[in-house]
Amino acid sequence: MAEILIIDDDPLFAETVADKLDSLRHTSRCAHTLTAGLAAAVEGRFDVVLLDVCLPDGNGLLAIDRLRSVASDPQVIIITGQGDPDGAELAIRHGAWCYLEKSSIVKEITLPLTRALQYRQALSGQKAVLKTVERDQLVGESPRFLQCLDMLAKAAAADASVLVSGESGTGKEAFARAIHANSRRRSGNFVVVDCTALPEQLVESVLFGHVKGAFTGADRANRGLIRHADKGTLFLDEIGELPLATQKSFLRVLQERTFCPVGSQEECHSDFRLICATNRDLVAMTEKGVFREDLLYRLRGLSLHLPPLRERDGDIPRLVEHFLSRLVQRYGQERKECLPDFMDYLTSYAWPGNVRELSQAMESAFAHAVYSPVLFPQHLPVHIRTAHARANVRGHETIPADVPSSEAILAWREAKDAFEREYTQRLLRHSAGNIMEAGRLSGLSRTRLYQLIRKFQLG
Ligand SMILES: Nc1ncnc2c1ncn2[C@@H]1O[C@H](COP(=O)(O)OP(=O)(O)OP(=O)(O)O)[C@@H](O)[C@H]1O
Image 1 (cartoon, rainbow, N blue to C red):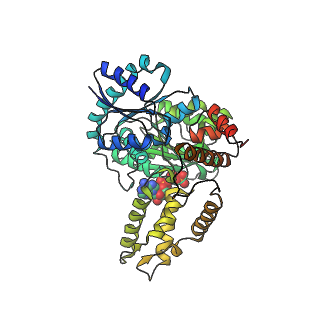
Image 2 (image 1 turned 120 degrees about the vertical axis):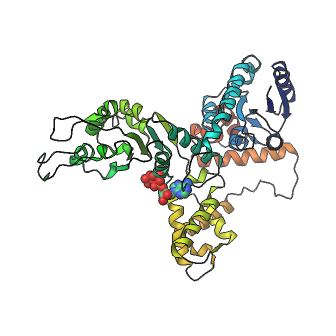
Image 3 (image 1 turned 180 degrees about the horizontal axis):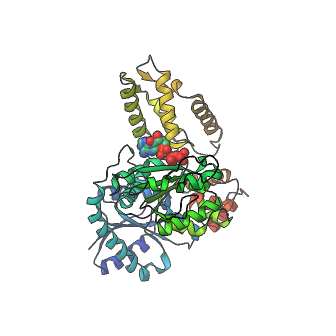
Protein backbone atom coordinates (compact mmCIF):
# COMPACT_ATOMS: atom_id res chain seq x y z
CA MET A 1 0.00 0.00 0.00
CA ALA A 2 1.45 3.38 -1.01
CA GLU A 3 0.79 7.02 -0.11
CA ILE A 4 -0.08 9.10 -3.15
CA LEU A 5 -0.53 12.84 -3.55
CA ILE A 6 -2.76 14.10 -6.36
CA ILE A 7 -2.14 17.72 -7.40
CA ASP A 8 -4.90 18.77 -9.80
CA ASP A 9 -7.17 21.79 -9.88
CA ASP A 10 -10.18 19.80 -11.10
CA PRO A 11 -11.78 18.37 -7.92
CA LEU A 12 -13.98 15.95 -9.84
CA PHE A 13 -11.06 14.49 -11.75
CA ALA A 14 -8.92 14.29 -8.60
CA GLU A 15 -11.71 12.41 -6.85
CA THR A 16 -12.07 9.94 -9.73
CA VAL A 17 -8.35 9.21 -9.56
CA ALA A 18 -8.50 8.92 -5.76
CA ASP A 19 -11.30 6.29 -6.15
CA LYS A 20 -9.16 4.36 -8.60
CA LEU A 21 -6.19 4.46 -6.23
CA ASP A 22 -8.43 3.33 -3.41
CA SER A 23 -9.48 0.33 -5.50
CA LEU A 24 -5.75 -0.46 -5.90
CA ARG A 25 -5.44 -0.30 -2.05
CA HIS A 26 -3.39 2.89 -1.99
CA THR A 27 -4.20 5.90 0.16
CA SER A 28 -4.31 9.31 -1.46
CA ARG A 29 -4.66 12.97 -0.67
CA CYS A 30 -5.67 15.77 -3.08
CA ALA A 31 -4.35 19.31 -3.43
CA HIS A 32 -5.87 21.72 -5.93
CA THR A 33 -3.04 24.24 -6.32
CA LEU A 34 0.70 23.92 -6.72
CA THR A 35 1.33 25.80 -3.49
CA ALA A 36 -0.96 23.49 -1.51
CA GLY A 37 0.57 20.48 -3.24
CA LEU A 38 4.14 21.51 -2.42
CA ALA A 39 3.18 22.14 1.20
CA ALA A 40 1.48 18.73 1.42
CA ALA A 41 4.52 17.04 -0.14
CA VAL A 42 6.84 18.62 2.44
CA GLU A 43 4.58 17.61 5.33
CA GLY A 44 3.68 14.10 4.20
CA ARG A 45 5.60 10.97 3.31
CA PHE A 46 4.35 10.36 -0.20
CA ASP A 47 5.71 7.63 -2.43
CA VAL A 48 4.28 9.05 -5.63
CA VAL A 49 2.89 12.43 -6.71
CA LEU A 50 0.40 12.64 -9.59
CA LEU A 51 0.94 16.13 -10.93
CA ASP A 52 -1.15 18.18 -13.33
CA VAL A 53 0.68 20.56 -15.69
CA CYS A 54 -1.60 23.60 -15.93
CA LEU A 55 -2.36 24.65 -12.37
CA PRO A 56 -3.89 27.96 -11.33
CA ASP A 57 -0.70 29.13 -9.64
CA GLY A 58 1.98 27.71 -11.91
CA ASN A 59 3.26 25.13 -14.33
CA GLY A 60 3.55 21.66 -12.75
CA LEU A 61 6.53 20.73 -14.94
CA LEU A 62 8.60 23.46 -13.33
CA ALA A 63 7.86 22.09 -9.85
CA ILE A 64 9.13 18.55 -10.45
CA ASP A 65 12.59 19.32 -9.04
CA ARG A 66 11.09 20.79 -5.87
CA LEU A 67 8.75 17.84 -5.39
CA ARG A 68 11.53 15.35 -5.95
CA SER A 69 13.73 17.04 -3.39
CA VAL A 70 11.33 16.68 -0.42
CA ALA A 71 12.41 14.19 2.25
CA SER A 72 10.32 11.25 1.03
CA ASP A 73 11.82 11.63 -2.49
CA PRO A 74 8.59 10.72 -4.30
CA GLN A 75 8.40 9.66 -7.92
CA VAL A 76 6.40 12.18 -9.96
CA ILE A 77 3.91 11.08 -12.61
CA ILE A 78 2.71 13.92 -14.84
CA ILE A 79 -0.97 13.95 -15.77
CA THR A 80 -2.24 16.33 -18.39
CA GLY A 81 -5.26 17.08 -20.44
CA GLN A 82 -3.24 17.97 -23.54
CA GLY A 83 -1.21 15.32 -25.34
CA ASP A 84 1.94 17.26 -26.06
CA PRO A 85 5.20 15.56 -27.17
CA ASP A 86 7.33 18.56 -26.14
CA GLY A 87 5.74 18.60 -22.70
CA ALA A 88 6.30 14.84 -22.37
CA GLU A 89 9.99 15.30 -23.20
CA LEU A 90 10.33 18.20 -20.78
CA ALA A 91 8.69 16.14 -18.02
CA ILE A 92 11.14 13.27 -18.43
CA ARG A 93 14.11 15.64 -18.64
CA HIS A 94 13.03 17.19 -15.33
CA GLY A 95 13.02 13.78 -13.68
CA ALA A 96 9.34 12.75 -13.94
CA TRP A 97 8.68 9.02 -13.88
CA CYS A 98 6.29 9.18 -16.86
CA TYR A 99 3.68 11.31 -18.57
CA LEU A 100 0.03 10.20 -18.80
CA GLU A 101 -2.99 11.74 -20.48
CA LYS A 102 -6.01 12.39 -18.29
CA SER A 103 -8.43 10.79 -20.72
CA SER A 104 -6.83 7.37 -20.22
CA ILE A 105 -5.46 7.64 -16.72
CA VAL A 106 -8.00 5.44 -14.95
CA LYS A 107 -7.34 2.67 -17.44
CA GLU A 108 -3.59 3.12 -17.68
CA ILE A 109 -2.32 4.18 -14.27
CA THR A 110 -1.88 0.70 -12.77
CA LEU A 111 1.27 -0.41 -14.58
CA PRO A 112 3.33 2.83 -14.36
CA LEU A 113 2.34 3.19 -10.72
CA THR A 114 3.38 -0.37 -9.91
CA ARG A 115 6.68 0.12 -11.72
CA ALA A 116 7.37 3.42 -9.95
CA LEU A 117 6.74 1.76 -6.59
CA GLN A 118 8.92 -1.24 -7.45
CA TYR A 119 11.68 1.15 -8.52
CA ARG A 120 11.44 3.03 -5.22
CA GLN A 121 11.77 -0.21 -3.35
CA ALA A 122 14.83 -1.23 -5.35
CA LEU A 123 16.30 2.22 -4.78
CA SER A 124 15.92 2.08 -1.02
CA GLY A 125 18.27 -0.91 -0.93
CA GLN A 126 20.71 0.89 -3.17
CA LYS A 127 20.77 4.08 -1.07
CA ALA A 128 22.82 2.39 1.64
CA VAL A 129 25.47 1.66 -0.99
CA LEU A 130 25.36 5.18 -2.43
CA LYS A 131 26.07 6.72 0.94
CA THR A 132 29.48 5.07 1.01
CA VAL A 133 30.71 6.95 -2.06
CA GLU A 134 33.51 9.39 -1.30
CA ARG A 135 32.51 12.55 -3.07
CA ASP A 136 36.02 13.92 -2.67
CA GLN A 137 35.96 17.68 -3.19
CA LEU A 138 32.62 17.71 -5.00
CA VAL A 139 30.43 20.29 -3.31
CA GLY A 140 26.67 20.60 -3.88
CA GLU A 141 23.34 19.57 -2.38
CA SER A 142 20.87 20.72 -5.03
CA PRO A 143 18.50 17.99 -6.29
CA ARG A 144 20.10 18.08 -9.77
CA PHE A 145 23.56 17.70 -8.27
CA LEU A 146 22.51 14.89 -5.92
CA GLN A 147 21.16 13.00 -8.93
CA CYS A 148 24.63 13.30 -10.47
CA LEU A 149 26.19 11.91 -7.29
CA ASP A 150 23.80 8.95 -7.49
CA MET A 151 24.99 8.33 -11.03
CA LEU A 152 28.60 8.71 -9.87
CA ALA A 153 28.00 5.93 -7.33
CA LYS A 154 26.51 3.67 -10.00
CA ALA A 155 29.39 4.39 -12.37
CA ALA A 156 31.93 3.71 -9.62
CA ALA A 157 30.38 0.34 -8.87
CA ALA A 158 30.34 -0.69 -12.55
CA ASP A 159 33.18 -1.06 -15.06
CA ALA A 160 31.34 0.15 -18.18
CA SER A 161 32.51 3.14 -20.22
CA VAL A 162 31.11 6.45 -19.01
CA LEU A 163 30.36 9.52 -21.09
CA VAL A 164 30.30 12.69 -18.97
CA SER A 165 28.73 15.68 -20.68
CA GLY A 166 28.10 19.24 -19.62
CA GLU A 167 29.12 22.79 -20.32
CA SER A 168 32.70 23.86 -19.80
CA GLY A 169 33.69 24.10 -16.13
CA THR A 170 30.76 22.07 -14.75
CA GLY A 171 33.13 19.52 -13.18
CA LYS A 172 33.41 16.78 -15.82
CA GLU A 173 37.03 15.97 -15.02
CA ALA A 174 36.38 16.27 -11.27
CA PHE A 175 33.55 13.70 -11.59
CA ALA A 176 35.69 11.41 -13.73
CA ARG A 177 38.39 11.48 -11.04
CA ALA A 178 35.82 10.75 -8.35
CA ILE A 179 34.45 7.78 -10.33
CA HIS A 180 37.99 6.38 -10.58
CA ALA A 181 38.75 7.07 -6.91
CA ASN A 182 35.62 5.17 -5.86
CA SER A 183 36.06 2.27 -8.26
CA ARG A 184 37.89 -1.01 -7.83
CA ARG A 185 40.58 0.45 -10.11
CA ARG A 186 41.50 3.17 -7.63
CA SER A 187 45.00 1.79 -7.09
CA GLY A 188 45.71 1.96 -10.85
CA ASN A 189 46.59 5.13 -12.78
CA PHE A 190 44.09 7.80 -13.77
CA VAL A 191 45.47 8.86 -17.15
CA VAL A 192 44.22 12.13 -18.64
CA VAL A 193 44.31 12.69 -22.39
CA ASP A 194 43.25 16.13 -23.56
CA CYS A 195 42.07 15.43 -27.11
CA THR A 196 42.22 19.15 -28.01
CA ALA A 197 45.95 19.17 -27.31
CA LEU A 198 46.91 16.08 -29.35
CA PRO A 199 48.98 17.03 -32.40
CA GLU A 200 47.21 15.29 -35.32
CA GLN A 201 50.31 13.50 -36.67
CA LEU A 202 51.21 12.17 -33.24
CA VAL A 203 47.80 11.16 -31.87
CA GLU A 204 48.29 7.46 -32.48
CA SER A 205 51.80 7.36 -31.06
CA VAL A 206 50.72 9.30 -27.96
CA LEU A 207 47.85 6.86 -27.38
CA PHE A 208 49.24 3.55 -28.63
CA GLY A 209 52.97 4.21 -28.14
CA HIS A 210 55.71 3.65 -30.72
CA VAL A 211 58.82 1.61 -31.21
CA LYS A 212 62.25 3.19 -31.54
CA GLY A 213 62.76 4.58 -35.05
CA ALA A 214 59.03 4.37 -35.96
CA PHE A 215 59.21 7.91 -37.39
CA THR A 216 61.70 10.77 -37.60
CA GLY A 217 62.47 11.88 -34.08
CA ALA A 218 61.38 8.61 -32.44
CA ASP A 219 64.81 7.97 -30.99
CA ARG A 220 63.33 6.06 -28.03
CA ALA A 221 60.44 3.65 -27.70
CA ASN A 222 57.33 4.99 -25.93
CA ARG A 223 54.70 2.85 -24.16
CA GLY A 224 51.80 5.24 -24.92
CA LEU A 225 49.05 6.41 -22.61
CA ILE A 226 46.70 3.47 -23.15
CA ARG A 227 49.25 1.04 -21.70
CA HIS A 228 49.90 3.49 -18.90
CA ALA A 229 46.21 3.17 -17.98
CA ASP A 230 46.42 -0.62 -17.65
CA LYS A 231 44.38 -1.68 -14.53
CA GLY A 232 43.35 1.95 -14.16
CA THR A 233 41.19 4.53 -15.93
CA LEU A 234 41.78 6.31 -19.23
CA PHE A 235 40.09 9.72 -19.28
CA LEU A 236 39.66 11.22 -22.74
CA ASP A 237 38.75 14.86 -22.28
CA GLU A 238 36.93 16.56 -25.18
CA ILE A 239 36.48 13.28 -27.04
CA GLY A 240 34.61 15.17 -29.79
CA GLU A 241 37.98 16.54 -30.93
CA LEU A 242 39.48 13.11 -31.65
CA PRO A 243 40.35 13.03 -35.40
CA LEU A 244 38.11 10.71 -37.48
CA ALA A 245 41.03 8.45 -38.47
CA THR A 246 41.97 7.92 -34.82
CA GLN A 247 38.32 7.29 -33.91
CA LYS A 248 38.44 4.23 -36.15
CA SER A 249 41.60 2.76 -34.57
CA PHE A 250 40.35 3.62 -31.11
CA LEU A 251 37.06 1.79 -31.72
CA ARG A 252 39.07 -1.37 -32.35
CA VAL A 253 41.00 -0.86 -29.13
CA LEU A 254 37.74 -0.50 -27.25
CA GLN A 255 36.33 -3.68 -28.73
CA GLU A 256 39.38 -5.84 -28.14
CA ARG A 257 41.51 -3.94 -25.65
CA THR A 258 44.48 -4.79 -27.93
CA PHE A 259 46.45 -2.55 -30.30
CA CYS A 260 49.79 -2.27 -32.06
CA PRO A 261 52.22 0.54 -31.17
CA VAL A 262 53.19 2.69 -34.16
CA GLY A 263 55.90 0.91 -36.18
CA SER A 264 55.23 -2.49 -34.60
CA GLN A 265 53.26 -5.59 -35.64
CA GLU A 266 53.19 -6.91 -32.12
CA GLU A 267 49.86 -6.70 -30.33
CA CYS A 268 49.77 -5.17 -26.86
CA HIS A 269 47.00 -5.49 -24.31
CA SER A 270 45.72 -2.99 -21.79
CA ASP A 271 42.92 -3.53 -19.28
CA PHE A 272 41.69 0.04 -18.87
CA ARG A 273 38.36 1.55 -17.99
CA LEU A 274 37.29 4.39 -20.28
CA ILE A 275 35.71 7.65 -19.17
CA CYS A 276 35.18 10.36 -21.78
CA ALA A 277 34.04 13.95 -21.43
CA THR A 278 32.52 16.33 -23.89
CA ASN A 279 30.83 19.69 -23.99
CA ARG A 280 29.73 19.11 -27.58
CA ASP A 281 26.59 17.49 -28.90
CA LEU A 282 28.03 14.17 -30.09
CA VAL A 283 24.69 13.01 -31.52
CA ALA A 284 24.58 16.09 -33.77
CA MET A 285 28.21 15.43 -34.70
CA THR A 286 27.37 11.87 -35.77
CA GLU A 287 24.54 13.26 -37.92
CA LYS A 288 27.04 15.58 -39.61
CA GLY A 289 29.43 12.65 -40.11
CA VAL A 290 32.24 14.12 -38.01
CA PHE A 291 31.90 11.63 -35.17
CA ARG A 292 31.50 7.86 -35.59
CA GLU A 293 28.13 6.58 -34.46
CA ASP A 294 29.53 3.13 -33.55
CA LEU A 295 32.13 4.78 -31.34
CA LEU A 296 29.46 6.89 -29.64
CA TYR A 297 27.50 3.72 -28.75
CA ARG A 298 30.65 2.23 -27.22
CA LEU A 299 31.40 5.35 -25.18
CA ARG A 300 28.08 5.77 -23.49
CA GLY A 301 27.70 2.57 -21.52
CA LEU A 302 26.65 4.99 -18.78
CA SER A 303 25.88 8.66 -19.36
CA LEU A 304 26.25 11.39 -16.81
CA HIS A 305 25.09 14.89 -17.65
CA LEU A 306 26.27 17.66 -15.34
CA PRO A 307 23.92 20.62 -15.02
CA PRO A 308 25.18 24.17 -15.53
CA LEU A 309 25.76 26.04 -12.26
CA ARG A 310 22.84 28.42 -12.93
CA GLU A 311 20.46 25.42 -12.74
CA ARG A 312 21.81 24.10 -9.43
CA ASP A 313 19.39 25.58 -6.89
CA GLY A 314 21.15 26.79 -3.77
CA ASP A 315 24.61 25.44 -4.64
CA ILE A 316 26.32 28.80 -5.26
CA PRO A 317 26.56 29.81 -1.57
CA ARG A 318 27.83 26.30 -0.71
CA LEU A 319 30.53 26.50 -3.35
CA VAL A 320 31.46 30.04 -2.26
CA GLU A 321 31.92 28.77 1.29
CA HIS A 322 34.03 25.87 0.00
CA PHE A 323 36.29 28.05 -2.15
CA LEU A 324 36.62 30.61 0.63
CA SER A 325 37.75 27.99 3.16
CA ARG A 326 40.25 26.66 0.64
CA LEU A 327 41.68 30.15 0.04
CA VAL A 328 41.90 30.90 3.75
CA GLN A 329 43.79 27.66 4.23
CA ARG A 330 46.04 28.16 1.23
CA TYR A 331 47.09 31.72 2.13
CA GLY A 332 47.03 31.19 5.90
CA GLN A 333 44.84 34.29 6.32
CA GLU A 334 41.95 35.17 8.60
CA ARG A 335 38.48 34.16 7.43
CA LYS A 336 36.65 36.82 5.43
CA GLU A 337 32.92 37.45 5.72
CA CYS A 338 30.74 37.72 2.60
CA LEU A 339 28.31 40.65 2.72
CA PRO A 340 24.76 39.69 1.71
CA ASP A 341 24.99 41.91 -1.38
CA PHE A 342 28.26 40.20 -2.36
CA MET A 343 26.34 36.93 -2.31
CA ASP A 344 23.44 38.54 -4.24
CA TYR A 345 25.82 39.42 -7.05
CA LEU A 346 27.05 35.85 -7.17
CA THR A 347 23.66 34.19 -7.04
CA SER A 348 22.17 36.42 -9.74
CA TYR A 349 25.06 36.01 -12.21
CA ALA A 350 24.58 33.42 -15.01
CA TRP A 351 28.06 31.77 -14.70
CA PRO A 352 28.70 30.83 -18.33
CA GLY A 353 32.04 29.34 -17.19
CA ASN A 354 30.27 27.44 -14.38
CA VAL A 355 32.12 26.20 -11.27
CA ARG A 356 35.54 27.02 -12.71
CA GLU A 357 34.49 30.65 -13.27
CA LEU A 358 33.09 30.85 -9.73
CA SER A 359 36.32 29.46 -8.29
CA GLN A 360 38.34 32.03 -10.28
CA ALA A 361 36.00 34.87 -9.26
CA MET A 362 36.46 33.92 -5.59
CA GLU A 363 40.21 33.79 -6.00
CA SER A 364 40.20 37.22 -7.62
CA ALA A 365 37.87 38.70 -4.95
CA PHE A 366 40.05 37.22 -2.21
CA ALA A 367 43.16 38.77 -3.73
CA HIS A 368 41.48 42.17 -4.09
CA ALA A 369 40.26 42.06 -0.51
CA VAL A 370 43.72 41.41 0.84
CA TYR A 371 43.42 44.00 3.68
CA SER A 372 39.67 43.72 4.17
CA PRO A 373 38.03 41.25 6.58
CA VAL A 374 34.82 41.55 4.54
CA LEU A 375 34.08 40.76 0.90
CA PHE A 376 32.20 43.53 -0.93
CA PRO A 377 30.70 43.29 -4.44
CA GLN A 378 33.42 45.77 -5.42
CA HIS A 379 35.99 43.01 -4.91
CA LEU A 380 34.43 40.95 -7.70
CA PRO A 381 35.73 40.97 -11.30
CA VAL A 382 34.34 43.85 -13.31
CA HIS A 383 32.40 41.66 -15.79
CA ILE A 384 30.32 40.23 -12.93
CA ARG A 385 29.56 43.71 -11.58
CA THR A 386 28.61 45.04 -15.01
CA ALA A 387 26.34 42.01 -15.65
CA HIS A 388 24.61 42.75 -12.34
CA ALA A 389 24.19 46.43 -13.22
CA ARG A 390 22.78 45.60 -16.67
CA ALA A 391 20.38 42.98 -15.32
CA ASN A 392 19.02 45.47 -12.81
CA VAL A 393 18.43 48.13 -15.43
CA ARG A 394 16.75 45.65 -17.76
CA GLY A 395 14.59 44.32 -14.92
CA HIS A 396 13.41 47.85 -14.21
CA GLU A 397 12.53 48.59 -17.85
CA THR A 398 10.55 45.43 -18.43
CA ILE A 399 7.99 45.80 -15.66
CA PRO A 400 4.92 46.35 -17.82
CA ALA A 401 2.58 49.15 -16.85
CA ASP A 402 -0.39 46.81 -16.53
CA VAL A 403 1.16 44.52 -13.93
CA PRO A 404 -0.56 45.29 -10.64
CA SER A 405 1.48 46.63 -7.73
CA SER A 406 2.01 44.16 -4.90
CA GLU A 407 -0.33 46.25 -2.73
CA ALA A 408 -3.37 46.08 -5.04
CA ILE A 409 -5.61 43.03 -4.77
CA LEU A 410 -7.31 42.27 -8.07
CA ALA A 411 -10.04 39.80 -8.78
CA TRP A 412 -8.53 36.34 -9.41
CA ARG A 413 -9.35 36.39 -13.12
CA GLU A 414 -7.84 39.85 -13.63
CA ALA A 415 -4.68 38.89 -11.77
CA LYS A 416 -4.40 35.67 -13.77
CA ASP A 417 -4.82 37.60 -17.04
CA ALA A 418 -2.14 40.09 -16.01
CA PHE A 419 0.24 37.29 -15.13
CA GLU A 420 -0.47 35.34 -18.33
CA ARG A 421 0.03 38.42 -20.46
CA GLU A 422 3.31 39.36 -18.81
CA TYR A 423 4.58 35.78 -18.82
CA THR A 424 3.73 35.27 -22.50
CA GLN A 425 5.39 38.56 -23.45
CA ARG A 426 8.56 37.62 -21.59
CA LEU A 427 8.49 34.12 -23.01
CA LEU A 428 8.19 35.37 -26.59
CA ARG A 429 10.98 37.87 -26.03
CA HIS A 430 13.20 35.21 -24.52
CA SER A 431 12.57 32.74 -27.35
CA ALA A 432 12.76 35.48 -30.03
CA GLY A 433 9.22 34.57 -31.12
CA ASN A 434 10.14 30.94 -31.84
CA ILE A 435 7.09 28.88 -30.82
CA MET A 436 8.99 25.60 -30.56
CA GLU A 437 11.52 27.18 -28.22
CA ALA A 438 8.77 28.95 -26.25
CA GLY A 439 7.03 25.60 -25.85
CA ARG A 440 10.24 23.95 -24.70
CA LEU A 441 10.95 26.66 -22.11
CA SER A 442 7.43 26.92 -20.73
CA GLY A 443 6.16 23.38 -21.06
CA LEU A 444 3.03 24.76 -22.77
CA SER A 445 1.65 23.13 -25.89
CA ARG A 446 1.76 25.01 -29.17
CA THR A 447 -2.05 25.23 -29.19
CA ARG A 448 -2.03 26.86 -25.76
CA LEU A 449 0.72 29.27 -26.79
CA TYR A 450 -1.21 30.36 -29.89
CA GLN A 451 -4.33 30.83 -27.72
CA LEU A 452 -2.37 33.10 -25.37
CA ILE A 453 -0.85 35.06 -28.26
CA ARG A 454 -4.31 35.58 -29.78
CA LYS A 455 -5.91 36.43 -26.45
CA PHE A 456 -3.41 39.21 -25.71
CA GLN A 457 -2.88 40.18 -29.36
CA LEU A 458 0.86 39.60 -29.11
CA GLY A 459 1.29 38.17 -32.63
N1 LIG B 1 30.99 20.32 -7.44
C1 LIG B 1 32.19 20.88 -7.34
N2 LIG B 1 32.67 21.20 -6.14
C2 LIG B 1 33.87 21.81 -5.99
N3 LIG B 1 34.66 22.12 -7.02
C3 LIG B 1 34.25 21.80 -8.25
C4 LIG B 1 32.99 21.16 -8.48
N4 LIG B 1 32.83 20.99 -9.80
C5 LIG B 1 33.93 21.49 -10.39
N5 LIG B 1 34.79 21.97 -9.46
C6 LIG B 1 36.07 22.62 -9.72
O1 LIG B 1 35.89 23.50 -10.84
C7 LIG B 1 37.01 23.45 -11.71
C8 LIG B 1 36.56 23.01 -13.09
O2 LIG B 1 36.18 21.65 -13.03
P1 LIG B 1 36.54 20.60 -14.20
O3 LIG B 1 37.90 20.88 -14.77
O4 LIG B 1 36.28 19.24 -13.67
O5 LIG B 1 35.43 21.04 -15.25
P2 LIG B 1 35.23 20.48 -16.74
O6 LIG B 1 33.75 20.38 -16.94
O7 LIG B 1 36.05 19.25 -16.95
O8 LIG B 1 35.79 21.69 -17.59
P3 LIG B 1 36.21 21.72 -19.17
O9 LIG B 1 34.99 21.38 -19.97
O10 LIG B 1 36.60 23.15 -19.40
O11 LIG B 1 37.33 20.74 -19.33
C9 LIG B 1 37.99 22.49 -11.07
O12 LIG B 1 38.91 23.25 -10.32
C10 LIG B 1 37.13 21.63 -10.15
O13 LIG B 1 37.86 21.13 -9.07
